Amino acid sequence: MFKKLIEKGIEKSPWLLHINTGSCNGCDIELVSVITPRYDAERMGFKLAGTPRHADIVVVSGPITSQSKERLVRTLAQVPDPKVVVSIGSCPRSCNVFHGSYSVEGPLDRYCDVDVSIAGCPPKPEAIIDGLAKAVEILKTKRRGK
Amino acid sequence: MKFPFLKEAITSLTKKPSTELYPLVKKEAPEGYRGRIKFHADKCINCGMCIRVCAPDAITRTIEKTEEGDKITFQFYLGQCTFCQMCADFCAKKAIELTKDYSMVGTDEEDFMVRGTFIKKLPPKPPVPPAGAAPAAAKAPAAAPAATEKPAEKAEDKKEEK
Image 1 (tube, each protein chain N blue to C red):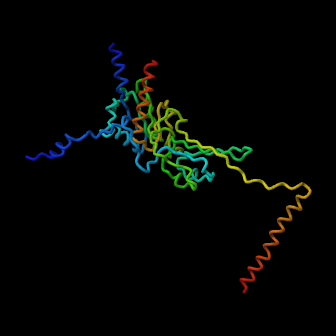
Image 2: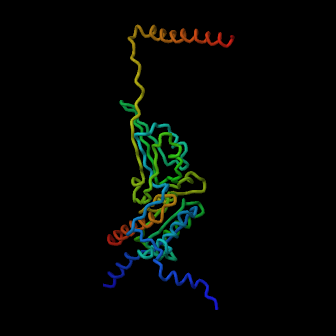
Image 3: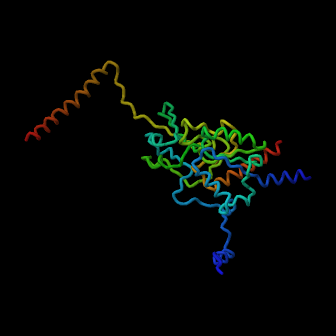
């Protein structure tokens, strides 16, 4: 019975982990705007986690630069398993204008499965909320499938 | 004793919360927002200016030869787009439009593809003359314009001399 309660609580309040892999900060600012009072995503249960070990949803922004690749792979490995990877903006999806650069080692799907992508450069906070809502649905199916 | 922001605090008590109730209350993007690309294939003339101008190479074009003419497909990959609107600005026929649709969420690459196909017909070919008459026919039209041009040039020369 306690297990059911915990399970329901986790589904209702997924914790986010934000990884910036060399982003231009445009997407990061939009994500900050989502979790601060204007678009308060905490009323839907989303909360920024301090460490990857607490996270359910991983939000990645930026093309993966050579400097951040190692850190990204290490951080993703620390997230416990039913996890959902969300890519914000065009950069993790396809490296955007940086593709072909000697210092960019993206796109993100080389290193992990990207479950939800939010297009836009940067996406509007409303679009990020839509994307997170989709990520929660995927998280639910992943947890119940287990 | 001074209370800084006392007035602010009292007025804020009666105000509505500043949080926007987004999923409940849908919000429209402001005028001029650059969102999902809409491609009007019927207006496009295949000049390729959008491809030339696109910084992240988000636009690809495939040309297929068919009997009716060239079947041209333009593909816009929104996952690689910067939404700078350069393609729409440079489009001579206004065939590309950036709409106010901001909610571009997908799980698959196909969700971010915007495609448009149209057939560009070749100009009608001139009727082929029979094989024997071909050289003569080819020479005759070539000679005829030359003949008509020469007097005209001469006339112009004369005018200039005068």
